[in-house]
Image (cartoon, rainbow, N blue to C red):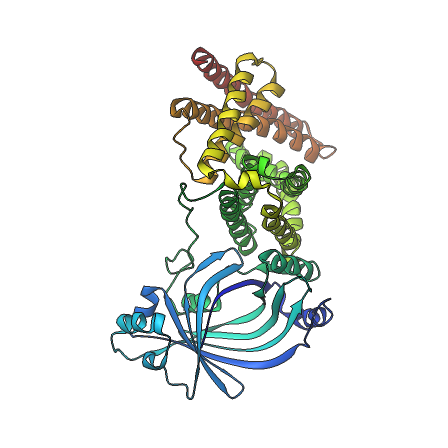
Length: 513
């Protein structure tokens, strides 16, 4: 009987036909200590008729590999993006009969029997796939099982293919797992696979949906009186990374939905804010490199996001025209430009270019705690965050008192500082008792209002610039030229309205300073 905490990174192939090429890459991996061995794995997952095991958060599987039968019980565990962690127990069987009584593991056998209550176990789903695996070791204490799985999942009368790479940490650090994942995904189009084979089978059987509570749960934040600053850093960055990977997964599934791109950008911004909050724990070079990587990644999507917003506002403008048909040519030009930018994004997604960026950033964050000075390891996370936010709020108020409202750049800098405070509080999920809640609430309100108003004004200017760029040399008739003028007038009217709101809001805020 084996019992261990399973930690594995799952990566799905975006193109099934690259399996053979991927196998060659795995065979040529530096530090691969054993040759890639091939085996056929046939598994049946069992549960009671009323799905008692599923409801209790357990999976029970019997797998045939060669002439061996193995029963496995797994807990739901945690799933952070493509990184899966859960407890697992394995028992070798003489025959494939699904009987809890024969699962001789003292620490969980009685629990399972209490859940099943002597009810017979019935097949829930089946998986059948070829696995080619080897062991990777770097000589520094890291050992990883590298496995390529190709086959199918069958459940509820339907089936879906399996084309995935599993990297399971046998011994060592998670950073090594992410590093080798980044190396492989640099060469082949992949995405982190957030769902286990079991959960994908549940989806097929109609026993779960993408928001099902039976999915692996996110680790809760450690109790503040028990956590130190590095622990807070590790949890907060892991949670932010999970949101980022889930956003990328949604965008990969439906790249035509503008909100998915927007949420990817939001998740990148959230991760950057967490890194800013915990910046004193990091070496300057570490923070600078990671922040630059995330900033550049976000900038790569700027143009499409601007065009998405332009398209949305364009519909509002058209609705106000007496004869909307006159704007058809302009609309077509904007539509073509937007679709061309989305085509580029789709190509990047299809080629898996975002995955190595993610894994590289994740790997860097996993390694950061190793360089945290000992003095910071003794600071409770709530005290660390409290002191950090107090300093930032003090600087925010000092800047607000001397700012020139008419200077858009100064307002922009205040907006950025407020955003960092706001996202820092929101993304750590912590309530710090030592902070003046009235003051922090005021700053959060100001930050949100500045972000909305200045962001909308920025969008107006961007959209006018795009319209000039898109229609340059293409407007031939007087009607078309007049329409462009009407559009700019409409945008300027919006800007005037937003600036009036901004000025009124600022006057009210200054009275409270």
